[in-house]
Image 1 (tube, one colour):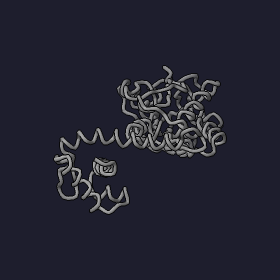
Image 2: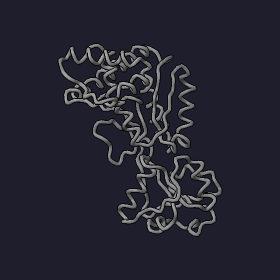
Image 3: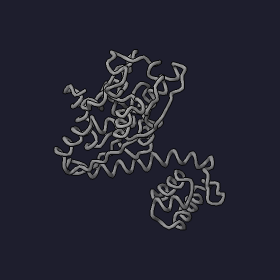
Image 4: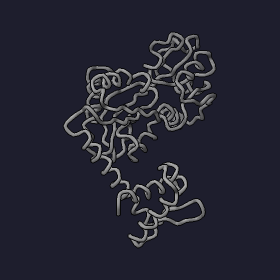
Length: 294
């Protein structure tokens, strides 16, 4: 088996078709089809069930898929490490960060890293924590920020921030001066929430399930400035990290009763050795947390 054939096989398996794989790889479809057929002939095993434009992995293909992911990722890691060997003047860091932290916690860290290591390419991906976990597993990113209330066994996690989720109300709301807000009072209001897949939304879904209520969702959006504007104009309330509204006089943060605290961690694949560039970035994140920036 050669690496190119495995890459083609992996792309077809993940995209669900030869045409989609060809578009993603920017390669003619016949070349991919021929490579897969040669791989099947070499192994003397069928890897795909072909039904029109759609293809499905056979049982044999499922077995190879697990190995192909490991092999392709290992070669990619080796190539990256060789490029970075003995120097931090080059390399790449691919990190996934949820939007709230990306906008209100990580900017000074990202700018400090860029200032110290201008030769390292820094790619920041914004997504919900569940999506980020999937991207870590697939190798699309090197590390990501996740909520570690129930950390996956196959990820190595390092806690860097404990943050409180609070109710966000307009300054003229009847509960704006309250010391706390009950879950019943919160769910009695029309809500502005992130879409599913973000820890902000998962917190609300978990609380509502325990309380046995169905949230009244008036707006769903992942755009934080829009969420803040909707709340400020009295069209609903929401819940965010307190840091998001710290400097906004039009909004008030009120703790829940009971309080809701989250442990946020930097995570990467367990057993995976980080490149020097990635390890340096992780060290900077943990250093920032250790300096009291919580």
